[in-house]
Length: 211
Image (tube, rainbow, N blue to C red; front, side, top):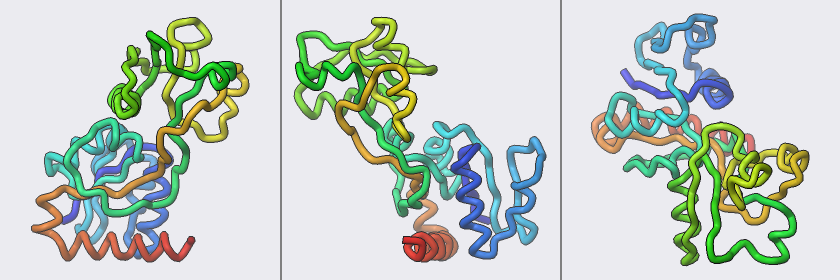
């Protein structure tokens, strides 16, 4: 049995769409049940439904053989996993944003405070440029950082950019592109190579066919 960790929400729905195209029966997972663990009728695949940020942990420790998570989550967690496939959905950008005038004056000054849900990614991004910033970890709407004076900048996921615009902010610099990625436990890839490879190859064919 192969265990797949799915992030609740859109990533799970999109992943199930692809798996069903491979002939995998995902009907139980699609049900309105409040269960967190599901098994396909033939017993070949088990799904565990977890919080998006927890997917890398379940895969790292071998509770799940395969996980589907956003690139932003993988970068933030920084766990030793094999990233095997870009599933090409859930596309957005992780970016530095703030008030437009910072584009003209530059975003570097003696002391910059950055509000973000991604402290590790943010620290690594600014450190790679030789810049030291004070990072303020927020779990809610990080746009409030500059609006209330809590922070100078934010680092956050940007899709349409509408929320930024409506709050007088804009993207100042891209950090990295983000999309759903398939990751595999390092031991599982060796011990269950055939089963895992069959799933990955099938998904790769579907993804490349759509592009």
